[in-house]
Image (tube, rainbow, N blue to C red):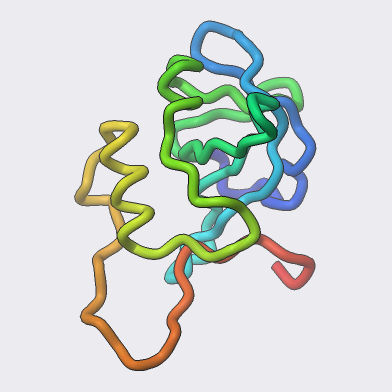
Length: 127
């Protein structure tokens, strides 16, 4: 996805699948902790008021709408981790597997630590 787009500007935009079917509306954008690059979007599907995580790469922004190159059924079946919280490395790996993405681009799972470490942070006002 274009890296010069403000991730907060994606919130509220309509999202469509590869066939042009509406998926829902972008609810939140999650940034990669290491790079700060927008990595995932939580799309409110309207189906039981559920958010489905979609990868922002290889999605495209076209005419103020997000076009996700996957079938709506696959998107709606994505793991549901809730929104407003950080994604753990394990959750991100589940998403990579679900979408069949190249695992060489997936975040490495760090060794367990005693502290609470954040992954996949939500884009906020300071970003």
